[in-house]
Amino acid sequence: MGQGPSTTQGEESATPPPRAGWALLRRALRRFPKSRAGRVFVLIAFVDAFGRGFFLAGSTLFYTQVIGLSTAQVGLGLSIAGLFGVACAIPTGWLADRFGDGPVLIALQLWRAAAFLVYPFVDDFRMFLVVACFVGAVEQAVGPIIQSVAGATAEEGSRVGAMALIAVARNSAYALSAVIATVVITMADSRTYVGFVLANAAAFLVTAALLTRLRLPRRGTGGDGRSGPRGAKLLPFKNARFLLLSLANGILYLHVPILSVAFPLWIVTHTEAPRGLVGAALVVNTVLAVSLQVRLSKGGDDMAHAGRKQRAAGLALALFCALTAVTGPADALTAGALLLLAAVPLTLGELWQSAGGWGISYGLAPEEQRTYYLSVYQLGATGMTVAGPALLTIAVVDTGATGWLALGAVFAVTGLVVPLLARAVGSQDPVPAGSGPGD
Image (cartoon, rainbow, N blue to C red; front, side, top):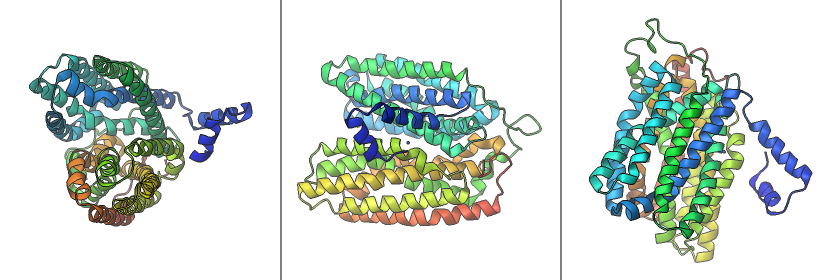
């Protein structure tokens, strides 16, 4: 989320001999979690992303052609819903520590299923806004809880490695459902988009059922039965370096809106490259992510290694920006080649950023308040998810090469600063027992 992508692609393009096929299967099985809880949770992640992939592939068409919204209404509604998600993420993380990750995650999946079952009955902007905010209120809260559960299912293994497997499962599911959805869209009418919405709701219900079979170890609590001592809810906000690490992770997390918004816009509006290159870049990203996620996550449980991974992410993303910046005036062939090449450091930056972020956040989260601390750390990435598309469009894409080079400088500086901040926080705040770098 092994072999490099070129080898794997070659083996898939020709029919592999039996021994080669068995070798691929053995490598996949070696990566699979040994614990029952770990295997169940990987399945849960796959099913969740499979349903989500269907909806994402047809969501814009559903909003505009089924509900009848304008693109401006869709953008406004989803932005407001995103703000709800920012406001609700941290309280939900606290609830997960108080009542358990498993029960809260089940409740969130049922909440999301209910919202998507209502979506087909929406017929105007006001009702769309209500349902979108209902969904958005829990969207940003799910990620930290998933990370906390993945860490719990790792048992004696690597927590960062467990998250890497979850990422591989999700990326694979997204790719598979996107391919199926694309074929369906080309062959069916707009009524099919309602089926995508219902498929997403069904996936949430299935994962909620599977979560009831997940047996997670109980985490330590304070003496009064509550998660942590009184006033503990403010502790991460009193640690300036912890918040700076969250902000740095958020800056590096800009690779997400870059891939989904800024990079496609740049290709289509500012270069001579063919528009089909947008899809080709996504294929490069998906293949590399699935092939290299686990490998590039190794060692991420150690705080120092995690900091260096984010440094590598910053430098890789800076290289991506430099390559992209020179494609504006280039001819179609040169621009296409450079943009495909740029997709490689963009993906490497994504993988190193995620591995480093997981390692740092696990290492600094006290066991009894793990989900709450993970939710606070996730604030930086959540903020960039909401603000990133507009920020990148105005300050980078519309500015041209200068904007890309300035963004690259920001990435490079951020990456270089993270190891220093991680070292300083680690030396000031000893990691609690049970959540240390060596776990």
